Length: 335
Ligand SMILES: [Zn+2]
Image 1: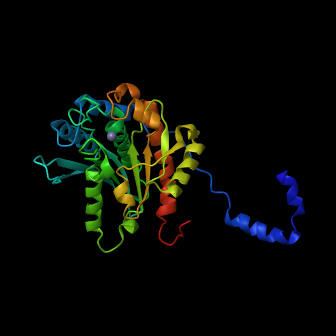
Image 2: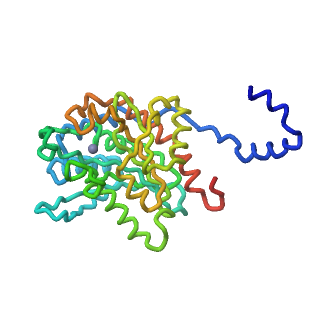
């Protein structure tokens, strides 16, 4: 029995034990409060995007979706920057992509570091590019493309009213989905996030990008009624996962988060590749791939306002802890 063995410890060891306990003192409690994120409002955004129809990169529908996101941001007083770009894939058609960026200034005026929160808003092209065994079909991407983009609009509304300490760049990426059906190492995918990292690099040429952008958080497929966010073992920071686990536990939501592990390639990958600490909140288990991922079943009937609100609550609760840890104020020490 382990506890009984404690009494046999030599007394001389006790001061050393006390010191080591100080060094690993329990982390401070996670401050929690009522959820300021309106799940119904986020769901309304997802519904509006889904009603546009399939929104693959380069389609008239995604331009309509881009204008919707831009219009909603401007309606809440946030100017949106649209970055239009093309990528030559060595094919006759050159897709034209658009990233959308909304900046919310932090309350610390002397701090020019950036925290990026991203989502992709393109949907997988499924009309003709499916593998031979899977004929073309109509795909509206309620969860994959819609859910995170709608939630990010609601996060924008919240942070416009309640800006955090450091400046947020909220980014809706185009071109996350691979142009050929198969991912094939992501060489022909993640166009928007790769472009955005290149832009950030060119603006901060004098210092390493990870000093300017210590953290990037990604949302993807966050609205399923049966919510199960996985623990990404490929590109997400174990330390950030640990921080978010404390938050989900404090909110009593731990059963919906990090119960299974999956290596995930997604829009956080180009950020992780340059040393930025990243975390992808994504639902991507084997059973998800079999039942709705890139399938006609990914429609509005599989998502809920409640799940969107839950993920939003986790993000707004975690953000002050992320800032405390990765954006120490001048004169204070990083823990
Ligand atoms: Zn997808």
